[in-house]
Length: 398
Image 1 (tube, one colour):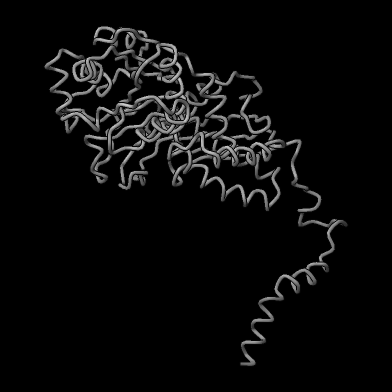
Image 2 (tube, helix red, strand yellow):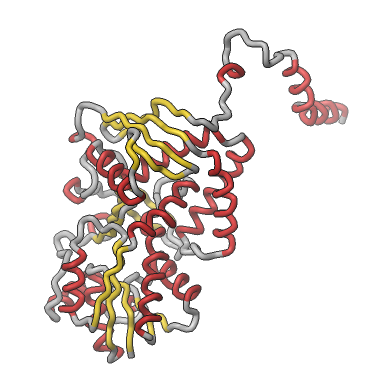
């Protein structure tokens, strides 16, 4: 039997290589997908997979694809789950799963596997993608099968089999990193009353330690996609990396959230997402100039549903694709620049401009102008308020 495992080099998947070999008498192929794990040396992870027992290991650079097809689409949608979570892990999992299937087809594998727990959302995200791309493939989820019931038991198993570990009993929280964010959960964070340890953060300084002088930047968008910072053009990956750098050193992008998991329980996650925070704020400012009221308000409604679909792992669903069509249509005029001040954890809007702007200063002014006839407002109010007036009259008659 041959199994392709989505391998991260972390605790779960490191243990799984050995476990899959023992329990399925299988050859294990490790698939390592680079989506911008900036805190990890992927060449060492590649070697670790082989030393841990993988027959072969593939390392795939998917950073550009991740930004262009997933992150930028999320930016266009203003995607954010429950008002806090920028969906960093949710966006990456379908892409990683797709690459696992690609390797499974290449290797003529009998099964695919992942390191997601039976309590979390990632198992759904991986497996829905597996099913949509290769319905016949067998899916093995060790967390739902093995007798190891906790991370502590995993640690003991790893020590017994000589598997090097990135966590310890003293510092047992796990993290997931990519270009869009870093997430932290488990261990000391499981009690939502416990504040996160500042030493945990990797992308951002605390606002208290951020520079006393602000950083002012101009972010330019073209059809909803960020392309320039301060007039300099950046590639897709590079612009995310640059905004992470600028935001991180100014303490921007930290979030502590208790969220509703798809599987029915609440969980606590702590996140760092500097670029996501900056782009979310900036993109909405350009939209405020160029989208008409009805489109803007309806997009707000769809954004909530869209974020849910991404969070739930339904990246390839019909509804998500249909909403993508609407979102892409709304972005045709979302071009322009936003001036932002980054200061001690705050991302402050200083101004916005767009060649497609619907804001007409001559019309909106409180000074003298000859476009808008204020007398017209009386008839508008009479018609707009007619249902209220009719109801009031008829209720009094009864």
